[in-house]
Length: 133
Image (cartoon, rainbow, N blue to C red; front, top):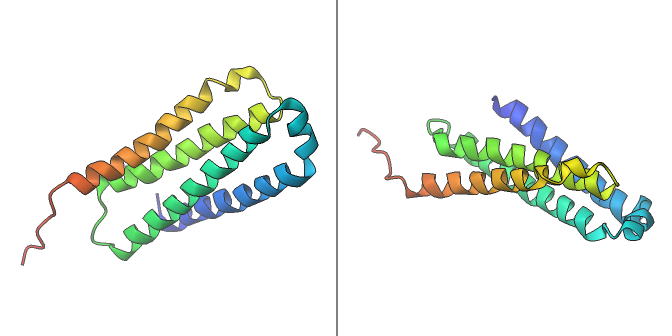
């Protein structure tokens, strides 16, 4: 996955996170309240934006260390992206009254988000590579 494409995805996650947050706070607030789903919507937005910032930080880190492309950090980016789509996406659908079949998808997204953080932990625990000098 190219850095430009990854930045595009991060931009999309960011703009949709802010937009969906405003949408839930203003345009569909009453409908969400009626279904008791304001908290669910807020959780989806929060997780989307938090992991969008984590993605941006990771891509900037990887971009500043071009010689270094640790495999587990690349997987963290992949897992966080999948996690945003599955976790936040399924919560948005459920909050809007979508089919309950999306309920079991939410934990899969949560597992993907945790897998991304686990990849970061694994990479941090690896011994440093020698510079060859």
